[in-house]
Image (cartoon, one colour):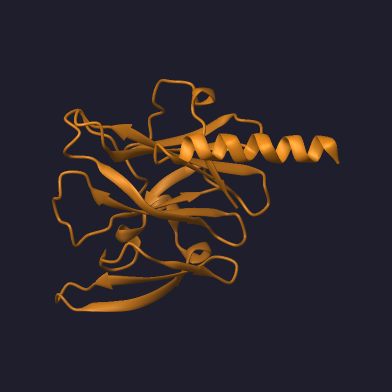
Length: 188
C-alpha cells in the first residue's frame, strides 16, 4: 500500500510538471505503448508546435513525427489526441503554428502494426475541418471533413480497414534528444 501511494504521488507530480509546459503522455489502453506529445518553444516563449514520439512501455523509441519548423511559424501543433479502444492507432489533430489554413486540422495516425505515422486526410476523401473527433468500437473514427465541392460533412471510418501502406507521412526521421528529460501529464 505504501509503495502504491508513493508511485501514485510520483506520477502525479511528474504529470503536473510536464502538463504546465503543454506536454502530455498518452498511455495506450493495453498499457504497452505511450505517445508523448512534446511542445517545441517559439522565440516568444509560447509553445505552438509539437513533436509526437511513440515509445514502448519501457521507453524504447519506436517512431517520431516532428511537426516543428526552423522558423517556428510553418509547423503544426497538436490540438486533440487519443488512442483507439483497441490500442492499434494513436490519432491526433494539428493546427498551423503560423495561422495558415486555420480551417484545416491535419490529422495524423500512428499505425501500431506498421510502426509508422500517416496523414489521415489523404485517406478519407477530404480535408479534416474540426479538431475534435471521437473514436469508437475497436478502431472507429468519427470526424468532420470538407469535400471537394466545399461542403462540410460528418463521416466515419474504421481505421483498421484503411490500406495504410499506400502513403506514409514523410516526416518520420527521429529527432535528437532524450525524452527522459521531459516530465508530463499522463492520460489513459
